[in-house]
Each structure stands twice: as C-alpha cells, then as structure tokens.
Image (tube, rainbow, N blue to C red; front, side, top):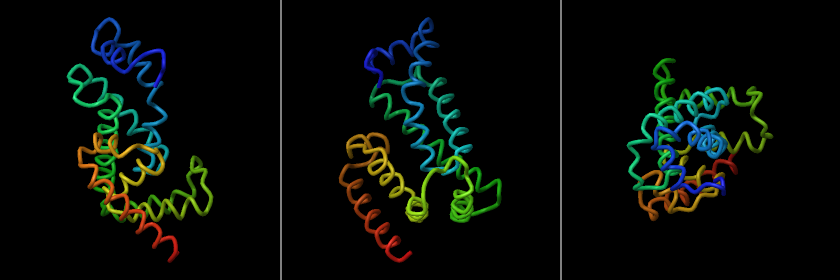
Amino acid sequence: MNTLISEETLLHDLQQDNTQAKAFEVLVSTYKKRLYWHIRRIVLQHDDADDVLQNTFIKVYKNIKGFKGDSKLYSWMYRIATNEALNFLKSKSRKLGLSSEALQEKTLTNLEADVYFEGDEIQLKLQQAIAKLPEKQKLVFNMKYFEEMKYEEISEILQTSVGGLKASYHIAVKKLESYLIEN
C-alpha cells in the first residue's frame, strides 16, 4: 500500500465525486500487481487474467460508493477478484462445452506454450498439482503459499473460519506432496 496515503483516506477519496478519479488511479496502481497474480493463479492464462483484472476494477469502481468498510478495502477487492475469476472459469467452460475439470486440463496443457509463463518444469508440475485440488483448497493454498497472506486475511476474503482455512491448507499441502512424489 502506498505509504503516502492510508486506506481510510483512499476510501474517503474514492467515495467523493471530486476526488474519485485520482483516488481510483492510486487504487489501481497500488493493487494492480497483487490482484493480477491472485487472479492469474486461478485462471492460469495471462490474457484471461488481464480480462478478469479489468472486470474486477470495473466492478470495484461501480460499487465503491456502496462499500461500507465492514472489511478492509483490499479484502473486499480480493473477494471481488476471486468471484470474478471463478465466474470467468465457469463461463468459459460453458462456452467451450467443457466440464470445469476438462477446461483446467486444457489450460494446463496450454500453460507451457504461454509466453507469459516463466516457470521451469518443477513450477509447471506444481501448477498441475494445484489444479487438481478442490476449489477452496486451491484458493487457500495460493493465498497462503504464494501471496504469504495470514489466515485472518484469507478468512476475511473468503468469509470462512480460520480453523477451516488451516485444515484446508494442511490437506492441500498433503495432496500436493503426494501428487508431486507420484509424478
């Protein structure tokens, strides 16, 4: 977060007509990279992540005046980004006439050819293993492992208990270890 402006000040400026445009520029520049990578870990493809990120910011812009501050601003945006990414995948699988599992397999197959994927063979195997996890475990693992979020932050974003998240993360790690050992 930009140290020159607090989240409270940013939120205040976002909700005022005369400061909204400038505050939104600050919001986008502050959170764009983090949200992009969060989305990218869900949808896997760069172009898809860009589309979902754009939709996320549009939704944030349209709904910012109704944001009540019951959670942190970034938690609210992460929740929107997560929902947008999951809805995008559902819509894409419907359009292609594929199950969500088949779409995931197709996306993983194309990941190696993605010019924006900079991973090596081990990272590709890890992505393949993560893709096999149930949706909630995948989200929790990505947020905890890659984004180094605290369970309390993840709990606020996914609106679930810390205890449940810890269990999901532990199970996900065990499944990933098994998959990677087998493959």
